[in-house]
Length: 432
Image (cartoon, rainbow, N blue to C red; front, side, top):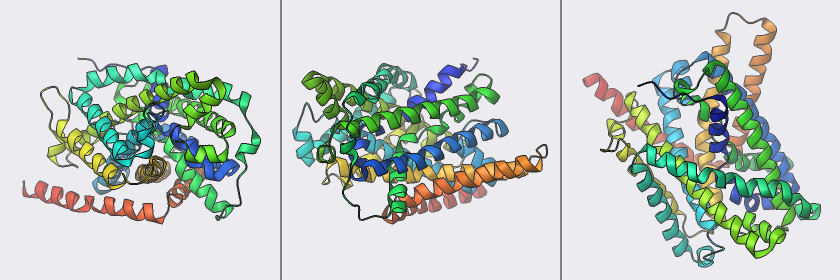
């Protein structure tokens, strides 16, 4: 059977759809402490995202295979580096999905206020959402995709409404902040780490490269324009919400988009946006749980993950990879359930962002390596492209530092847990 082809507009929708997920819905509350300094974070992360979009555009032409960052790293540096990237990417999926589940519950608080004040209730709701989405994915990719289609429009509706009409109630005074106990550089790095969460998914069009029509042109176009569109939507909507609500309202808000809509349109708007945001988060959770099963499944088929991950159920779903990933996601929620929803969300997105930035870091170095093997470029082109790769690497590294040393320490421990797995796999292959 011929592989279905994805055209340019569908590929752009894939990139933008994966990037515009649940992360934006709680981000205004997370950024409240930075006020107008949050624009520094958007500047760093937005610039880094656009440079990464260009990096993935070039790599997709130089290495036209499925797998995105994992595949590029394997070609450039071999199996060990590829395993590290795949392991880190898998970690980013189930930690990031825990944040999406938290965002889903946070957007239910307008209907069930106890979820915002009772940590046990919010814990049970988070776990329920995780396993409902997992059950949908266990029924097969087709069912998961159908559910995803139904919820995609709901991701954009509240964001676009507030990112446009919200400026009619915008107040610059709401962006003012008290003197911060951080330096300007520190605020820029922390803001970049928090806002980079929204840009995760830049690589979406590179993963199914073989299914993209005219991949040499369309992958790069989709990656670039999908990232540009997402960046504009993120900055506009988040800025509007932060300009509608004052600092105290934002910091205590479990559903800032719904609270902003209440100011604009009263209680009908409040409930409508909260419902749309909650369903959008559930749709995003479903879509990313699909990936958290597919990524280890694909890498297991390459022999770099245990064969356990490559097993399917009778409906063709990677059941064991899905179930184990969701168990680990549930553990992440359990470990942090005593915190407020906003604090849980912040911890999860920092860890997920760190785990996802590592594959991006490898991709920037892979591009630099591929660049010096190109013999058809002038010295000027080599120099300019090399400088851009170094700047990309530097911005990604800055965002990693911005996640904080506690997050970096936790991330390194999770990455180190993969070393015995890789060693065992290599010994198994040699013994066979």
